[in-house]
Image 1 (tube, rainbow, N blue to C red):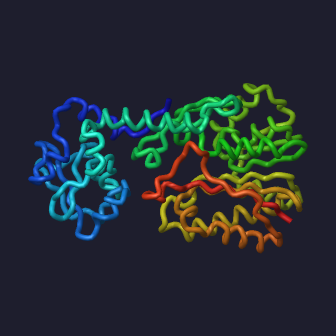
Image 2: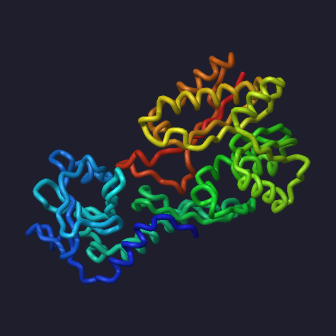
Image 3: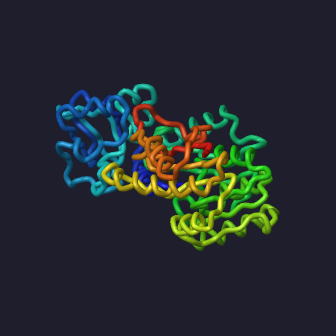
Length: 375
């Protein structure tokens, strides 16, 4: 298992050493709180959002912080309304735009008082619930054994991910690579690609360690090319070819900038039956959405020109700001117009089912995977 969320684990150690900390039910009536636990008081009119379930208390919602000394990053704090009545508790971050990541709300504690201000107990309970959900979804199975065990806010955690790294196709990963070294969110989309690749020539742009390319080759593609700028990632991709006993004459990887490669391929009038475009996060924040939209449009414009007429383009965005904006289809249509192509949506998907979304935190929806027929 790979675990991210050092702040949470630091606080877990602190919380587990003080099991006698009173519950919020005991604290709330007199507006007192345990010694050493600071209170983050919300501005007037900001409370309902977090009572409704949003777990990320942004700095603009905070009126003041009560506590001497002030809380440090990683400390457990109470979150209170304007009258200083606690509504929940979470982990404090003095430098992030998300000042508190709520772990448990006041009304939840009535269901499980033992978890109040007890990070260790709460983690045990929610990890067990997350594991049960995956079991009910049939994970792992004979066909799928790579899945996300804990999906942050979707499993009632914040800044906490656990991925189980196995697969029917074997992958070598590096913990020094991007995120956890592997992207389990695209698992079902890679599996789908393997079912439509037989007899095809496939181009995988921004291939990283070869997830889509390997599935295409495993699915019977005649020729697969993966393109990425990361030399360490491509070295792993090449090792993954050998690891899975795939024919190196049918799958190869190139280190090159995606835009430069596609422009050169267009100039040579090259084309592929299936093109996959899975760029890195181009719009990490809403404020850069406009410039990112132009980058997405230009990348898809080039990818569409490299797709044979009647062929398929699987295009992706892992930027939450883009997915939540609803602009992606408009961008794709703009790219098609620039390329002089007509497009039809064949399939629309997101992250795999082991990446649940909390409706109270729609910002957790980040991945878009669209399969287009390009004419």
